[in-house]
Amino acid sequence: MPETSPRIWIMGASDGIGAALAREYAARGARLVLSARSGDALQKLAEEIGGAEVVTADVADRESLSAAAARIAEGGRLDRAITLAALYDPGKVLEIDPDRATQIVTVNLAGSFHFARAAAPLLRDGGDLVLTGSVAGYVGLPQGQIYSASKAGVINLAETLRAELAPRIAVRLISPGFVDTRLTQRNSFTMPGLMQPEQAARRIARGLDGKAFEVHFPRRLTWPLKLLRALPYGLALPLTKRLVQ
Image (tube, rainbow, N blue to C red; front, side, top):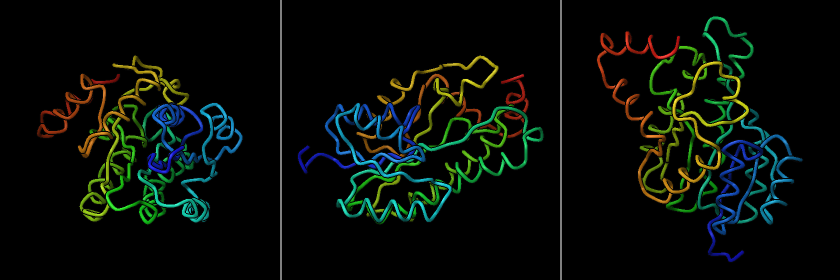
């Protein structure tokens, strides 16, 4: 691939939205660096899309990320670094296993922080650091359990980094709705606006082509939740309680 093609690091590329986004960017001619804990899955994906750098890493392990960053730096600067790595468990907050709750916060929130620290020095001036929140992070959703809280933290983190890293780096936020992956397949409720990973990947790639801070979809779900978040608690909390029974 020509050196002028953008070099993009995707964390969490072994399946789901991450793998779909890798396929989308490969079709666009990008030079990809694929990361996740599963080296075999990454290698299979790299072969499928016609080649990519495979660098195994775990967002919950700082030493793993540091080693990955050092290896990636040998190939030159990145144009974009995206993390989609996440854990999810449906259910009520106080019913989840405490150790599992800790894992979710570690991967989703602390992992985003670790990824930002590892990726920021690798980005060219004007490059994009992209974190993945969720529409579940807009408000405390019933049965969103600790996942919603962790994603609210990611949204806050992205907002802070946007201010702190400007103007050298553009921090961006992805806020997907329900996407049909192995994570959401555990939900027992009807998921409004459910999308396929390939659809989500196209929305993300198109959104990141622009300059907006947040890429959120589907709009018929995200805008009502944004409105709900903007309401006073006296109005918002009774409405939130009725969302999922």
